[in-house]
Image (cartoon, rainbow, N blue to C red; front, side):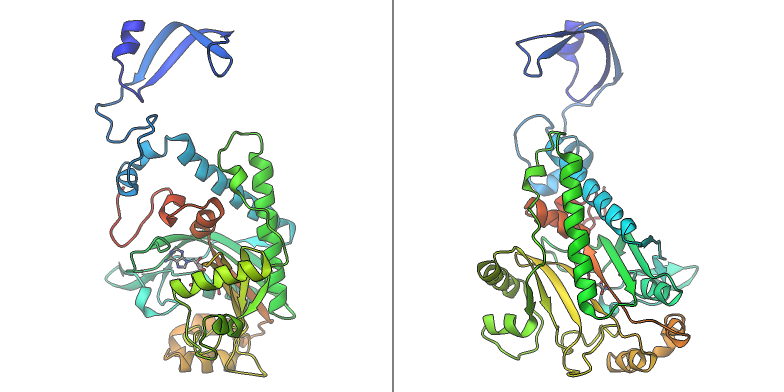
Length: 378
Ligand code: AMO
């Protein structure tokens, strides 16, 4: 048996029968004295990636050999946290009367604008991969489903090669009908997010997961920082331009300084930034602003959401000013034609959330088999 084990390559799969007994020498306090060892699967040599050695490979090599990479306990532990957080969200949603839904990922038209649509050949005609369940979650509110949520992949032909962008990402979407205003949406979001993280901590408490202690305490309510205040911080009051990555960093530091909370809402996005977002409700008192917000964690956007425009004529007008043809959205618009309640919701990037919660340097580390501009394998 000793000879067999001595020549057996690392990572092989074996079946051992023997006696377990207490042992001071072993750091687990027990040892296994084998009576019989059977090799179930012999590992090839050399391993393209070390599993037990402490040699750290670069991320590209790790992702190229992801199956071996995922055998490392600290890498698998990321996905145990991810699973526990998602279980926490599901629980929190179900407790609050949300119905879990699954919407189509093959579409005739996109919701979030043309540039990031993936076209696919659909029996010789054009179709697109869903960038978000946006239109369908709203249509279901029109169908009388008062509260819905979905956890599913979303696809963006995002050519930017950054640590935050994937071409396929996990999107956690929620939509709720009969809201009084956008605050209902923000309160629900912070409530379910805090509950999900608390539940994940509880679930993983005694499992030895090395990342659990990194999960932050979530203190609600999160600060609400108007877009215009953030613009002042950047020294460009009233510019009405979207924030770039560097701007977000500055805002993240300032928000933490002033409010002591790594989570914060940026509220009342200007219409100029949300021009293409035809479903974002413009404020009645000041149409140059919307009821749209982002939720950021230390300068990283993890959520966008807001109150939706539920009045048919205005949805159509917004589509026209976004340069879209209402005729190609007939299935969506029908939901508004026969009684659509006021509603709102959000889309949360699951990979980004896991990245910021665990302080990972790259969103790819939070996804099992990430897809980006340059990666379709494995
Ligand atoms: P938005 O386009 O801001 O909003 O997307 C919502 C959240 O999804 C995540 N995300 C991404 N994560 C990784 N890679 C990407 N390429 C990527 N793109 C987006 C981000 C982002 O905050 N329909 C709206 C949501 C709504 O209004 O309900 C939407 O999709 O964390």
